[in-house]
Amino acid sequence: MQNFLLFAESIAVDGEIRAPMRNGRCAFVDCADLAAVAAAVLTEAGHRGRTYVVTGPEALSAADAAARLSSALSRPIRYVDCPVQEATAILRGQGSPEWMIADMLASIETFAAGEIDEVTDVVERVAGRSPRTFATFARDAAPLLAAGVPS
Image (cartoon, rainbow, N blue to C red; front, side, top):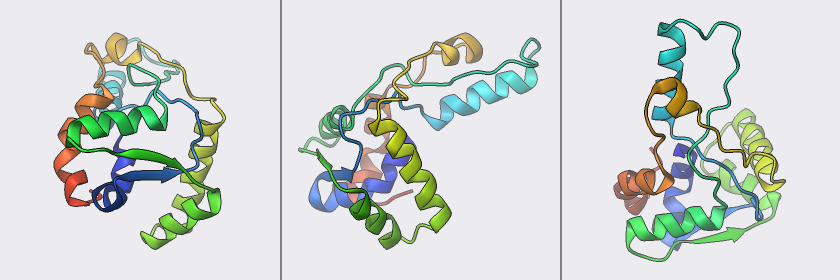
């Protein structure tokens, strides 16, 4: 979910998220949920040799995410599907290092292909709590996104 903070400036200035995510879906996960699962795995017995796919509670498209951001910010935010070259230029313009750009674009490509839409119960099962929803993330991140502050 926190990757959406990379769009803070374009959300604040243009009211949009520009990325080549097409109509893919992803069960975006909050970094606090990742940390809670990691803490449980590292401090509790029974996890040795296990692999967990940690996800958020719902698979959303970029347009779905934009709708939730619109609600949190009380103004329209739209998703604009753009070419990979434009996304690369945006990330470079933000000063992202080349390795990060490559990783982000690989993740976006996987997202766009619809390969990461699985929803699991790992956060609830391993961390013992419900995963944060994207709507909750959007509400909490709204001040940063409204100000155009990426982190």
